[in-house]
Length: 177
Image 1 (cartoon, rainbow, N blue to C red):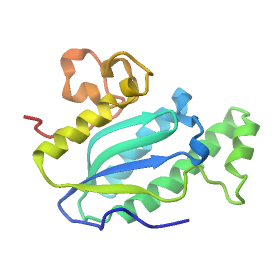
Image 2: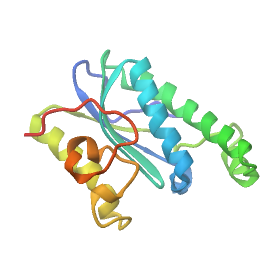
Image 3: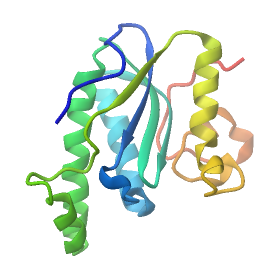
Image 4: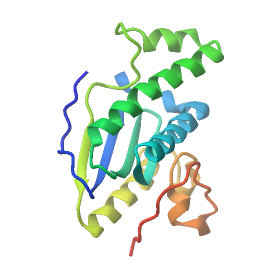
């Protein structure tokens, strides 16, 4: 598996990350899988530790904006990705989803994610705001919902509590304006 990142590790900087599901399978269409990845993302942020600013679990990929305290993005992702694969495999086994388990194992060892990672350091408050808005509007642009508040697997409601959307996991809010 490649460990290439599009940005170097940078302490004290937020990083915008995109992880794609292998073959762009719509794994996170299953609510229990989307919930698992977000719970795991929060768990890994608490364990690493890292600030989790925004996220969305799209059917075939994950976007998040976070800041590992030590700046080591690659190390954080080297924990998140295999743990997510193991958890998806365990959920598939628990629910007798043999085809999903076979798909995970097609490449030899079980693998959920497309090879590689995309990480971009975000330096300015304006760019942070733009990335948060991009993350939250991704389901609208993809035609999945009419409004960001309609998509269950995002942090939108943390920034807009008046929307009534309850984010599935806690974020570490940043000032948007």
